[in-house]
Image (cartoon, rainbow, N blue to C red; front, side, top):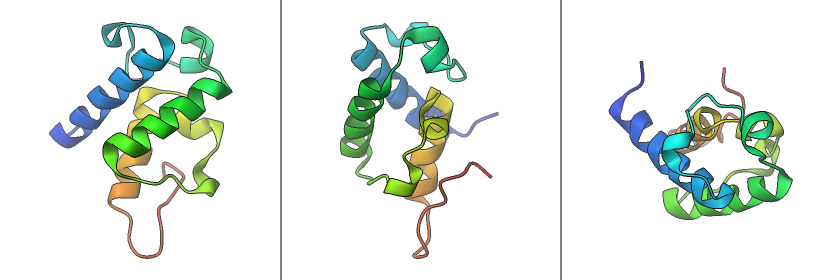
Length: 96
């Protein structure tokens, strides 16, 4: 189960992904593999990354720019939440 904050971030990420891919947000489930199911590619990742950074006011560090961080709405939202709550030591890029 997700928290309201997680739900809100996932909803916004879903909107961004839908806009970039030209798909209605309702057609995207949080756990859909965007690469396998929706035609997501590296250009789409860059477009989503730019919009996510702008909307949420975060900067995704270079070490976090790996496919695993961007394969689903769930993983992108989790990355945003980790960056938002990271300590001075820096964000954790892994989901552990």
